[in-house]
Length: 309
Image (cartoon, rainbow, N blue to C red; front, side, top):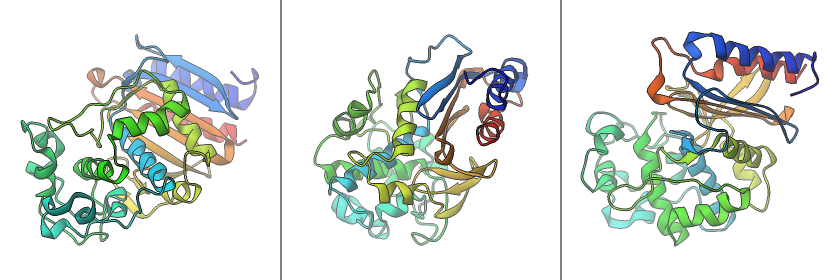
């Protein structure tokens, strides 16, 4: 912990106390705070340890964004490549002009609801990718934001031919291995394609390592220009976080400081505040959500304010 009696220490202690006592936050599993390269607070509120992997839900999308950035640095993909180019004739005519950039910004224009909602797609015995590609177009690509789980599954599928190898093999070689992340697992659909939209399993400490990559923008891994673009708002965004949106990252301001957030269902949040060298991780237990629950993200602005004070 920071020096006892400092505003930063007191803010973290107050956040911890609130998580322990506020019934709306009772599903919280972890709170981790890293400042200037050091973990200054790490709390586990349930059985899962800080180094045990758990479902990070849609934080997975920000990992996919990272793999796009690494592939771009490796000269394997450009953001203006189209689905028609990446996936060939299986892409319906109305979807062929959709680009990697459109998918990263959730502006691909496809219908993400009804039979094309990812929960419905996941009931299919096979053919998830083709079912998602068949979604009707509701708006021209690039025109409007619509949160679309399926779009990121399509993006992950499109990465495979671009990088010329299995996406999980590439992730291990170019992301997880270099960051010291082990013990991860990532589901595949019935056709063997890696889930782009969610359900990667990482530990809270792994998420700190991942956040540090984005804060430091290590040139050996991540193209700095891509990192800057990815954490800049390209649309005003919308649900579920109701924040502006970059490249599969949410962008915001906390206590007057620019920040970016990877978010997932049931209170999974990674917050990076580069100007303060501050990273926070909060996780939640999906089966334990109480009525009127709130994510532990609610306690983070006070920590940011104290770190900047």
